[in-house]
Image (cartoon, rainbow, N blue to C red; front, side, top):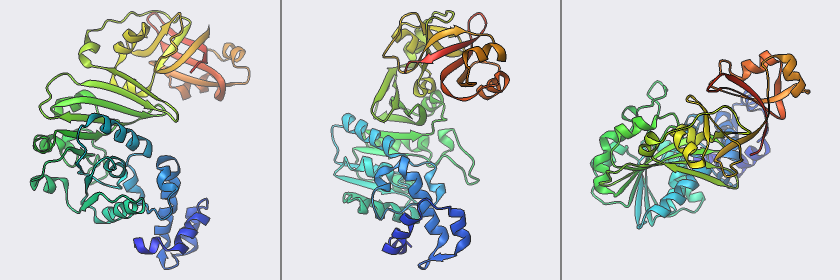
Length: 399
């Protein structure tokens, strides 16, 4: 079917109908140039997703996209490129590596480009063919493709590798989301020791929903955990496992933006030993980025930047002097306001506000409804529990 999809007529049709209503296309005709319309629609849908997620693929003619289900777990170009850069800094030897869960092949392409030889493994033959076609279209010549499972490949291991990568499937046969690593496929908790006997490094990509402490309990030899976000949305949690490593791992919270990268490192030993000072809101209020919040560096971020916390369970911080390099959003307090529509209307005269609630009885949507506000504008309303009472703050965002 790949041969039919890459026909010039089909590729031209996909480009010409890129913005069309795909539901209408499906109703209009069963086939397009001998190709089922449903498959052509898959390509249009995939190409649309690639605009933001994998621009290299979107801008390369002849790329083939899999059904929507196979998109759910694949890395974006931005996160795959980050991993490639990170790995290149960590490894002394880049002779050979293996991806035990190749899938759509985004990570394989970006990480594999570091190595002289790289192995892609996947039990889904159709997906393997798509990945191979795309890699060859992008002129990758160092990848060996094996149609098998990670477990079978591991059982037959005979060659040493400089690096092994695995992204376990996080859904069961009923498409239910799985969270514990031992429930995912392959079960890296069962394979880890053998894999680390054939490679000094095992990198495991996991769901952003995974509890990091639970992951550390299930895995051994974890040297570093990276919580990876893009534009303040957590995308991946990565466990860098290294042969014989026994010390406390570093936790690195990374937020990738279009033109910058913000990193914050800590470890759980320090986190548990730090003390935090609480206070009422001061001139500036801060919210850590999503990676720090996911990683759990609540006391570490306060300690690093000399900030007071607003409440034990409110992960907002405050100071009288501005901390310009804070890894997250910063706000300047303009007024502490009452929670009633009449008072609020005096500060938000156009009825628009960006409402943020943290450790508060109402969600942002519920609070907007109560205060008769709609989304928008440049002004912010922060609602949260403080050490002494509930607060609503009218604020300007600084970063």
